[in-house]
Image (tube, rainbow, N blue to C red; front, side, top):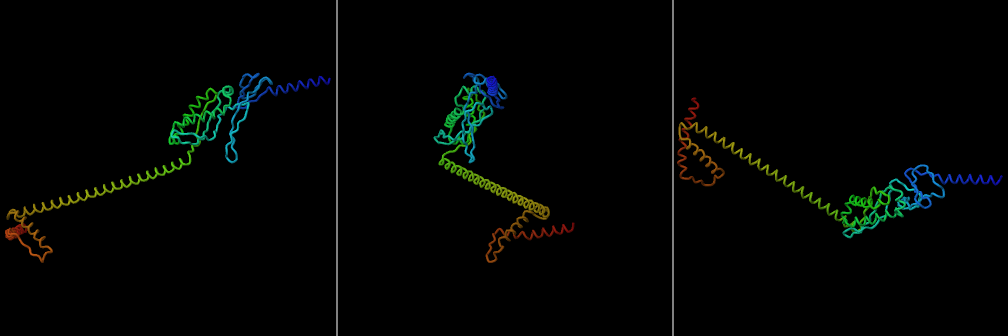
Length: 322
């Protein structure tokens, strides 16, 4: 009786062990690669799965994790696990030295975003997936940057990211992995190169400032010259208009004089005499201590003054009579 009880207990324990080992719960976004007697059998999806204990076993894989220490330092940890994460994974590679086409050594930090698309290939097509991706990224980055000068490397991050993504995605396709993005976190040139670049940037800024100042002064000079030109034009136009107005007034005065004296005498003699008298007035103005010599022809002009007086007197009488 005791032996039978022992057998029942043993069988019950075996059933419990088989059930415990035979039931496998897989979390969401995870899969498990199952081998039966050392050969690939199936891929367990999320949920409750039943396997044969001691016959079916999960195939372990190496996976990489990044842990951030309290001081901010990133520590990369590799573990052997029996579950493959299907979510997008970030690989933060350590800084590496790369030589540009113009022989400048720079340090580059890179981030890689990838996702598992075929768990079977991840297990059987590559021995250590994280290490393989890291080495492939490093060598590809050296090749891409080696084709660029330092200035192009610093200003062409998007181009480098695109080239890396295309090359890595094609190379890792047979590993069951899809590369979604590649990002360059930081590009650090040597100290002497950074100092030279800062001096160059300051020189460029000073040059642009000098150019802008010269352009402003040139524009100001042009504006001042245009203002002076317009002012001179307006002044000349004003003087010309004044002369025209004076000429028109004189012409009107001459016309009135001619109309008034043409019946009593020659208007030409009158106008010549008036002009001559005006000239004499200007000649003797302010020169009381000097001797003025009149030309011989002036006596003829002076002799006509009496006739001018008679003409003006007759014109005045005629106008008052009318």
